[in-house]
Image 1 (spheres, rainbow, N blue to C red):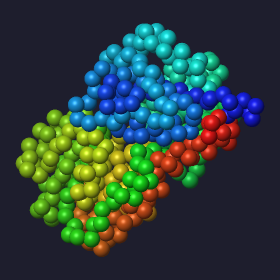
Image 2: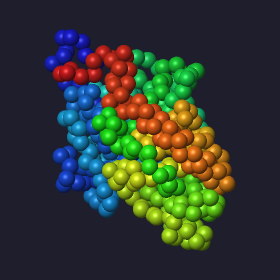
Image 3: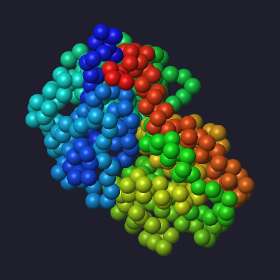
Image 4: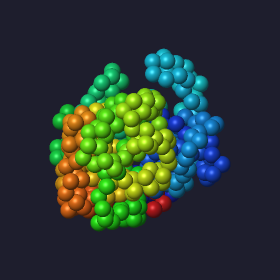
Length: 395
């Protein structure tokens, strides 16, 4: 990153993201959030001398669990929350940029490298600030690289494919044998994770006992994620496995709809809705389940929760979306169409042979161990060193 004669100067990273954070007295930085984001920010901070995370911050956050947003020499530059959602947020966003321009510009000018996380409006602002200020730029596309459903998604991919040069490192979340783009061979795949090596080694469960039909789905509760399909598959599965149960983890716009669906199907005593659960709570629920069901039709990048399920030794029933077929290709899951009948058949197939189930469980843990936060961090660090040299002045 710096020549030998410049090594005394600290290398500063500024991360621009739309991820919602909030004030927290329990965090050393004063801020917290949820999901895998804080773990990844902590890992990235280990690559640089100083890191600032530029994110919208609220005064009050989740009432059910949070993770401190912390790292090595990491601080948070809070932005006001954008107003509205959907079209209203887009319409008002230029005014939000003006309102927060002092912080946005100050952090861009003070840093050496800008990390832009897209899709996302705040990450897009960071990307343009890097170009205007002629800063080194690390772009990480966290959606489905191959599926663009909106004008903004088409723009992000189009723009990344045209950003070339050694001052820019382009990453697409996913995986595959071929590179993400023929137009821009410099774009590289990167997986996504929120688990350290120590966690990957300890969260697995020995499943040599009785194989029960204890299903779980953990995700944002939207129709496209497949929760409704899993609920509708349960009556079919109960015909074969009368003890079958389902845990539904996560909040979302469709949560109440799914509650009504379970009640209408007479499944209130079979389906447990947990709402929002922090990561440690999700791991506990995964460890006590026997199968992870994820018949998604959504535009996925690299779903971290699937990796968490594999790490806990859960075979996965999922669909041919994004990187999911490659994740389970080595015998740790089953691909199915996102229909109740297909999901019920796939679940029954996984559980009908205890020996096959246990082999899938062992395979799941082996596959998951390839995707640690350490490896994620080191993969990004190696790319940065190839382009810019050592990203840390004081190693």
